[in-house]
Amino acid sequence: MKRQAMENLIDWKQNHKGKPLIIYGPRQVGKTYLVREFAKQFYDNIFEVNFEIDDSANKIFEDNLTVKQLLKQLSAYDVNNIIIPKKTLIFLDEIQKCPRAITALKSFAQDGNYDVIASGCVTLHSVSSYPVGYVETLYLKSLSFKEFLWANNYSDSHIKDLEEYYKNEQMVPEGLHNVYNNLFLQYIVVGGMPEVVQTFIETNNIGLVVKKQQSIIDSYSKDIDKYSTSLIKERVRECYNSIPDQLAMDNKKFQYKLLKTGGKSSHFYSSIQWIEDAGLINKIYRLKAFDVPLRAYQDKSCFKLYFMDTGLLLAMYGGKNLQGKILTGEIGIFKGALFENVIAQILVGNGLTPYYYRRDERLEINFIVSLDDKIVPIEVKAKTNTKSKSLINVIEKQNLEYGIKLSMNNVNCSNPKYKCFPLYMTMFIKD
Image (cartoon, rainbow, N blue to C red; front, side, top):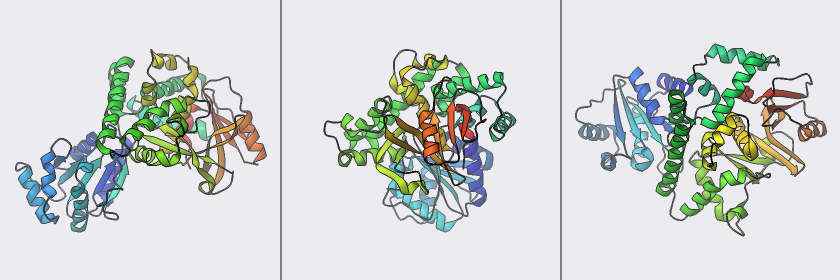
């Protein structure tokens, strides 16, 4: 399923020049499976060490970290698995459990004769022994909508044909438009966690999908207990669990007072930073002014937190048959949270840095991005009956070249300053 990530691994193998690769990201986005499949295709064998499953594996890295000593220790760890330069992939899984192993990556880089991949479920840059400059990194996210289409047997030619309608600003044939709208609703419900998508494809059973999602959410809660420090553990949990409630509000700006009476940034800042570093959220800052570069005009005191996977967000809301209601178009009160969340997820996945703008309760723009050096506001609507007073207001008053409205409607770009695209075409909005 992780086709793009596999292509990144192939590129690393061809160009890494001895540098180990660290794959990081949230748990259960398919890191281990991806590396094993990669090894099957491009190596004679894989030498795998999992620090979470085997605590004794840390002993491999207790002595000096020369490559000669490391190879001696590794061969003693698994006497039946011979490491052959360039033909064996050394895979260090859950490496965050062994800081000395992270340090050892520098030795492998300096030697340059062995292919090494490490993976971790949280960001590792904060580790004091992180070998800056000696490793390459790959951040693994949940499946994009394009990858979701691939998993559902839609080919590159299908997606390219759809992209032509986007580029040419032409309406999609209505029957095809309805098909992609339904697929997009499925993506909102299922999300992009590989095991969840696989469950959906194999069983078409939403109940099993939700059970799998809840299992992943439980594993993230356990990670909070396992990896966050005792000083912030409870605050991390409070922040993480509050995100669905914060997004369900009209004003989706993250509010500390909803966590604790009199709550302040200084009290929860490190907790939110931990959740962000763990790859569990996308943090979107408010924009103070429409000018370039956008980064210079961000208000870091005001932000929204979106889940990195919308399927997991929906599962956190609980309730009876919410998924079924989404699939049949009965969006309800959660429409703003879910549709904004999935668009944030896709925009970030496309390599963009989105912001939002809010003047007051009467004027708010969901996202603002930079495309080809142009400031482009984006408004997200959940249904087909849509009005966009805020978007029109901002385009005119800020003298912007154009804006984008995303909804369940078909393409309509008759007004060049006000371009309407279906939600599923967000995957083509790239710089």
